[in-house]
Image (cartoon, rainbow over all chains, first blue to last red; front, side, top):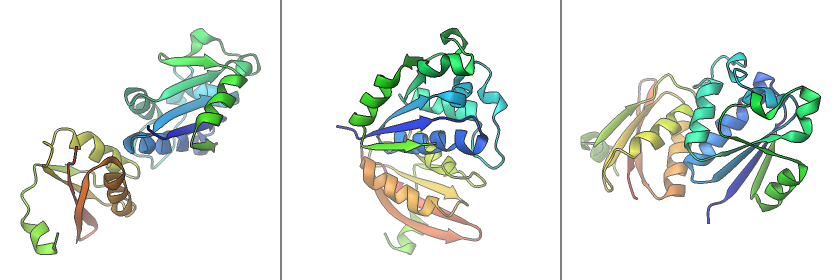
Length: 119
Length: 84
């Protein structure tokens, strides 16, 4: 069975927004199952039109390209519904292919994961 | 493989990922190897030093064979044989 990586994406600051995708795409390449859990300002990354606003000099791909690589590679993207009210976002604001989940979804995924990373 | 064997190897595919930062070359390698027949070989050109470690690790992890690396001026040629 494939090993599982769970990444906690809690910020839209470029230095914190890009590493989950850089490491996540690498983990997919190494045949891991990858789940990204977006919460707090990290939700802005998966808001429609949000990824385009987060840029970082020197990265090999844009954030939008990285999102496509992860989605095409079968990664699961989960939006934390507990932070929707804090950030001011609704399910309809999210890009395609994102599931919603709460605290229990994260805890369950964390218990099952072989690796959990936090950004 | 020896340096001479690598130099004379006729690869099925060459991927030029020079100028791309990590994890670009690794992602290119993964994407491109799918168009190489099983048992076929691929050469990745990379100017990113970490690719020298990443590609052999990746190959070992996912069932391909790392054949070796040739160092050129400012870049590396990394050879992989598709295993599955």
